Length: 342
Image (cartoon, rainbow, N blue to C red; front, side, top):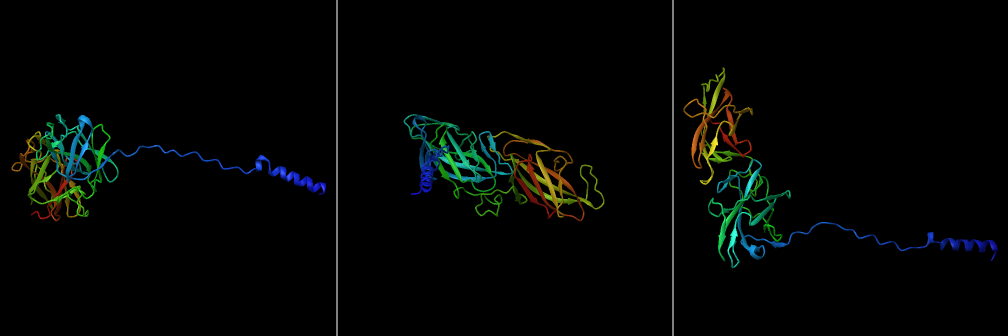
C-alpha cells in the first residue's frame, strides 16, 4: 500500500476511536418527584346507611337520614341562622348512636361536617347542633346503645348544587364521603329559580303575593294593602300632577320562641319602588304608624307582630309596578306587585 494512503487510513482510524467520537449509552434521567398528599381515608357514604366514625372512646355510629335547602332562617336555641342574599342554607338531618359500653358525651364539637360546593370551596357547620323535631340545642350524654336524632345548618351559595359532604369525628382523619347531587330536597315555590329544573338555586329576590308572609332576616313581612292617594303625608306637599302610593305592612319576629326579642326601626328595612316607567325610588323616611302620621319602631318577641306603612310620591299618569324590601341590606329581597293599586 502506498505510504500516503496507509498514513491516511491510520489517521482516520485513530480519529474514529477517540473518546469524542466513541458511541456512548444515554444517561438515565433522574426520577421525577411530585409532592402532595393522598385523599383522606374513609368510606363512601349512603343516605340511610350507618357508619362508625372515630376510634376508641370517641367512636360513634352516624347515619345521615336526609338533607334539604332553605332560604328561611333556622333557630337552634338562642342562635338564629340567616342566609344572605347570595346564600341558602343546607340542613343535614342525621342520627347518632352510642356503640360503646360506656356513656358518650355528644355535643356540637363531636362531629365535623364539611360540604364542598360546585366551585370546590369548603363550607363547615356552625358550632351548634339542633335536636331533631325541635329548635332546641342538642348537648347530651348517650347511654350505651342510646340513639338521638339531630340536625346541623351550613350556609352555602344560593346558586347550584352542593356536590360533596365529608363527615368525621373532629381531629380524626377517617371520613365518610357523600355524593349529594340529586339527593338534597329542593327549594319550594316561590323561592326556587324556575330556570333551574333541579330547584336548588335560590332567587335573590322572591315575588310574594299580598297577604302572605315572606322571610327576610330575623323578621317576616307581608303586604296588607296598597292604595293611591291625592293627599300629602308627613308634610310633603304634592305638586301638580302627583299622587301618593301608600303600602301597609305587617312585620313579625319569625324566630323560634327560644330566640331573643328583636327591635325594628327606621333603617331595619330598605324599600324601593319601581314604577311603570322603570324608574326606581328608594324610601327615605321612617316607617309610619298606620293610623297616625308618626314614626314607628318597636321590639318584638318571637311570634309577635306590628303594623306600619311606607309611602312614595308618583306622577299622576304613572302607576307603581313593584315594591321590594330587604332587611339590613343583606337579606334576600321580597318583591310585591303594586300595579293594581287604586
